[in-house]
Length: 126
Image (tube, rainbow, N blue to C red; front, side, top):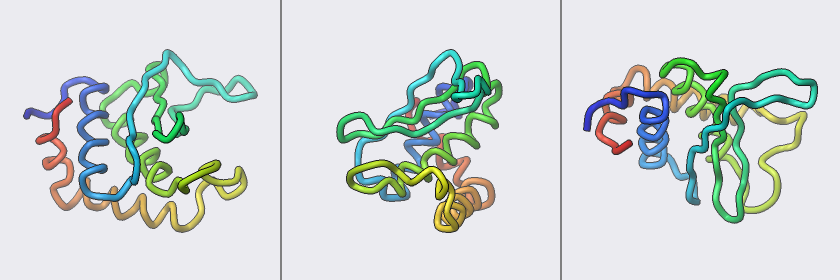
């Protein structure tokens, strides 16, 4: 399979690569929306949420304009998905990015960037 040529294609490949190499523990998908705004009206790139027993990474079409930005956010949000507990909210607001999150993010990012992960992701369907 060739490397995805669009943001949507590459997001699917990267997420499938992560799911094949780290234990997410439940179905995870990507959903694209026109834009994401916080309570103050500020734009943001994406978030992870639970829908029933499954997890969904919601991404902003407006904010994520390149494949590289999309890849960065998919990896970031996949870390939230991996650390999401079996029930309840992912993490409390003030502990949104605990040290364990950054350790996992660094592990995945390092493998993707420096240990052929970006090439391995090409093998997955869009």
